[in-house]
Length: 160
Image 1 (tube, rainbow, N blue to C red):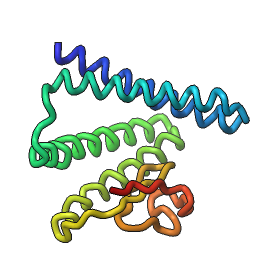
Image 2: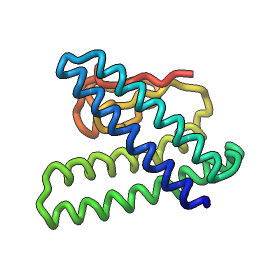
Image 3: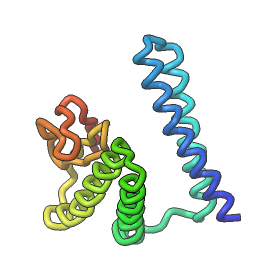
């Protein structure tokens, strides 16, 4: 049962991401009524996915356990996946996919440092996330993303 719930949650998160992309396109095409609808669908699917993840895993673990899982299991898994996908993209010559993997690898490698920085200086801080590649910057947004070179205005503030 757990595997089916995890699969369902994964599909729902994927659909949430697709709906977000549809919303961005509708906005670009000057269709705000559809942009808002797609964004609502994205939020709906993300909430459903979260609910099924909780059912699959039971209750959410302690913060200490979640930190251990996120930084010692999940993050390295993503790095491995991106490295493997990048090799495959190079074999088929997909420049866009190679660049995407390169960006994601850079982001995840830098994300490993966020926990150490928080351990060294345990204060509540703001984070800024690049809305193109996902790079996370603590405390302030850089003038340009060090991963994809997006300008400062592309960063989303995550504040307490």
